[in-house]
Amino acid sequence: MQLKFFGHSAVLLSGSKNIIIDPFFKDGRAPSGIDLVAVTHGHRDHLGETVSINRLTVAGNEIAKYLEKKGLNTVGLNIGGSAFVEGVSFMMTPALHSSWIEEAGPGVYGGVAGGYVIEMDGKRIYHAGDTGLFSDMKLIGEYLRPDIALLPIGGKFTMGPDEAMIAAQFIGAKIVIPIHYNTWPVIEQDPGMFKFALERTTDIKVIVLKPGEDFFVN
Ligand code: NI
Ligand code: MN
Image (cartoon, rainbow, N blue to C red; front, top):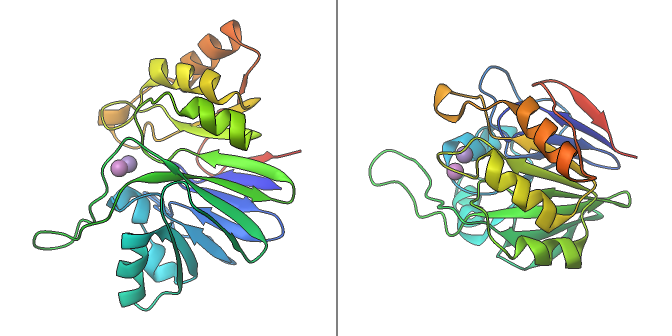
């Protein structure tokens, strides 16, 4: 499986299916050839281009209903639930965050925010979505045993690097990839410092990807 980081929280998993998670592209466009979309919550920097990509979309129930009204085919999940979608396993994990859909007027209720553990081709990827630190990340680690954890480090709206270091140890994935930082000045962080600190104190490897960079998952 190949993992490509598009910046912010947008990550493409390419294996037996091409899955884009949180397809928001600040400076670019959605890649072509997408089979499945997964959305962690309703904020615009995560829902992103979901509607225009218009592929089968995994989302929380409320966002799934919203997308169905826009004409999309969806699989609606809720926290702790899972589904096999075209041979790929999705489990929706909790996230400590909010989830309204930012539209003109009062906006649309987006249910609760989540993350996903996605298993494809024998590899498990945990995309935490936007979240604060929570101790049930230990349960995600023990029960779902992800190979790779994608964790927000930007702070302000999510965990910062200090909390993400604790999260990484709770989850126990051998590889951590930081996300949700440096998209805007308000979430500016130094991923190199995060890598240095986590690798100095644990056996976890931190892979820092620039937008557009790939990582081969083996
Ligand atoms: Ni958010
Ligand atoms: Mn966000």
